[in-house]
Amino acid sequence: ALGALLELKREGRLKPRPLGGDWRGLKTLYKATVPAAFWVALSCLMSFFFVGPNPYTPPTVRVYFLVPVEAPGWVVYAALPLALAAPFINALIVTFGEEFGWRGYLLPKLARRMGWIWASAVVGVVWGVLHTPAILVVGHNYGRPWCLECLRAFVLLTLPMSFLHTWAYLKYGVWGAAFLHGAVNGWAGAYFLLYSHTFGNLVWSITGLYGAATLAATAAVFWLLANPTARGNKAVFKNQV
Image 1 (cartoon, rainbow, N blue to C red):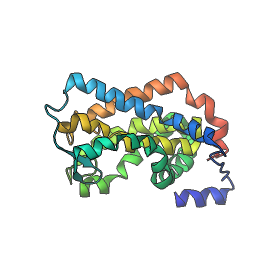
Image 2: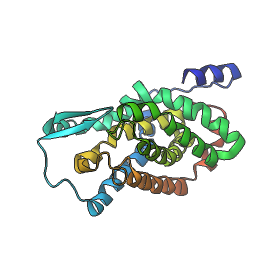
Image 3: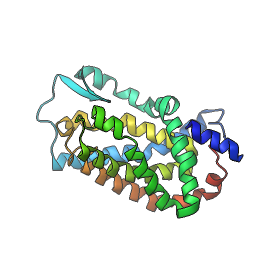
Image 4: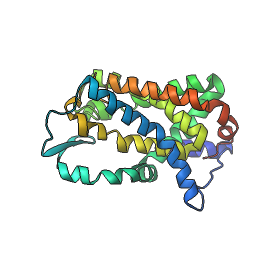
């Protein structure tokens, strides 16, 4: 993000815009999180028929960030209402910086040369590959360190994910992409409250082939319905963050 900021400053194309002086700006940015809710809901619904929920409700829930952590089940379920704040909190603390580099700089830079579709695909692959240290060293998202298959599965996930973030960027700017990213990080874990027995499964986990398939379907729906490339070209090329 810092490199993108310095490069945009050097090129004289940095024209940030504020969130807005009232709740309307925040409400608009939350619209960018709709694809994340759609994807998680679709994945949970379809898994009920394909893999079935846990045969029992365990007294503890394995919460996964970089490594699995045991937590009392009631604590996790009581915290679910806080999930509504996840996009906002994650965007402020983590995802805006990442999205400023991906969508604020690299994506439009590539789109000038190859168009939005190919640019989104390239960013998606690079995005996944750059998670290599976290996936191989600590088993991020899969719980299995040094798993090359996990890395390939994650790239298949970030590829359609990139198209959804392009959609959010073209409609709502970098902040919109950051809110969507924050929503994905905050809400995807809900899948494992119902289907924790799929964690680390490269086929049926939400981070496996199944999750990539439902994510690709979600990306197709939002691209076909919203036609983002027709809406956002002028705003994007002005680099309105």
